[in-house]
Length: 325
Ligand code: TXA
Ligand code: MG
Image (cartoon, rainbow, N blue to C red; front, side, top):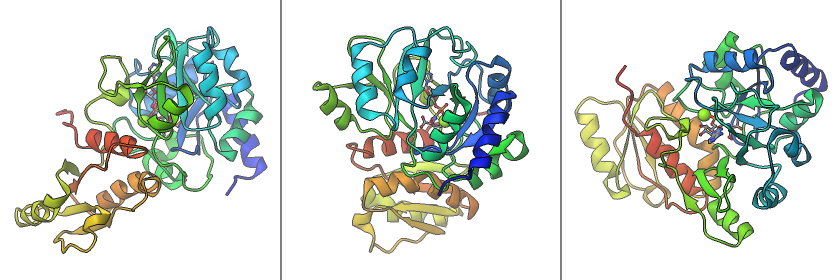
């Protein structure tokens, strides 16, 4: 499904005028602003309720533009860009002058990626510049994977919403720090660690709990309203039953191996067998359990390989301690 050309032109005009456009990517919907316009970028932070020190990703229309936005392109970054763009990979590099400091949260590095979605690419091509965009949700909450999620959550705060149908990957891009000689994964995502390692010919460190200041690393993130607890798969049924008895409205993520187990819960989501389908559905499942009135979600972690690494990362964050304010 592609948005019509007049919508693309209108959205590009909104960006040029300093407005905000929500747009589809292959991972999740983004809340976009002109990456060179400090005031527009400031509004993104305001609409999201995100601390201004937390950097945004700059979206580009093609790998050929990379050199315009970063100070230098190390050989490793070049290799990864050629292999994985357009696609769910974000490279952190040294900031080029063109990028507004607001976009990078004041940092001297910048995160860039070329999204693999026809509507996003049409928008970027019509606009011509870089689009700074975080996921189009309020800070700390579940990322949107449909245009309706965006409208429900952000409503009139966005000037224009481009509808490109449901996102195909469903979890955010993999973020790789490519500033140094040895790249490392800052956030697991749509490109798997195994694919990156195959492309690089060497193992990669995963720093998903590093000291590096990145908002995705806040203990509670990607969180639905309901509390999320993680248990071993064989304990799900007993945990659900006891929580129901304590008066909770329980939502359960039931892994495929336990699909036939009798589970007493308010709502049961059958976790898909394939990790790609699980990633695609994950945020929608969390939203659905909230909508159905569940106040407790019981899930277990998938094997942390392939896309399972990103899914487990998001579930851990969703289950992380919530801010007390
Ligand atoms: O798939 C995605 O990456 C989506 C779509 C819209 O492209 N975007 C996304 O943006 O997930 P956001 O803002 O929700 O998460 C971007 C993450 C931040 O949490 C931060 O961890 C990292 O990008 N980031 C941005 N700039 C950085 C920098 N200079 N150094 C390290 N991390 C950075
Ligand atoms: Mg986000």
